[in-house]
Amino acid sequence: MSEGSARQQELLEAAYAWVLDRGWAGMSLRPLAEAIGSSPRVLLFLFGSKDGLVRALLARSRADQLAVVDAVGQGGDLAAVGGRVWAWLAAPEHRALLRLWLEGYTRSVADPGDGPWAGFAARTVADWDALLADHQPAPYRDTPAGAAERTLLLAVLRGALLDLLATGDTARLDAAVAAHLARL
Image (cartoon, rainbow, N blue to C red):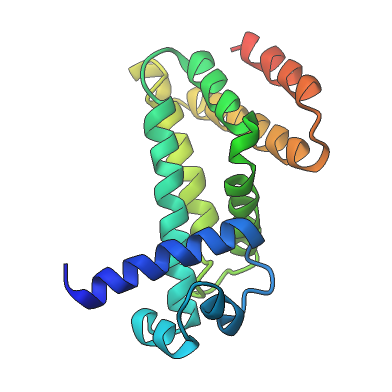
């Protein structure tokens, strides 16, 4: 790894920690650069533009998401993996990452063009759908009913997550997710 790429990775990790703590809203290069021991000029040089930095941060966030997909995706049927996903989503120590994901997801939905947020939400849905499909029987997963079952589970998990982030009512949402998983 060259010195430039090592510095770029170091600053990316520091910037990622900063946005995990503060979110995407109002992210400005000057305060970010100051907080992570850099300058806006260096960030622009290393990432090409503010959009380039946002894309790198989204990719870094997606790497964390894919690590979760790998961690919860080992063995079991759709209900079992759904339960593991919910347990991970509901854990208090993941709230910063999940708030960051939600903000990126929302911005992505509002960015139909080729901006830095474009496609983030669609890639997220595809990643989770692929995980869930891996836990359905092979002939069934490729049917409209199999796709609908996965889509409904993903919608329940995403909706419960939004409600959890808004209310913190873990007991009510644990019960709701458990009721849905029991129907699978």
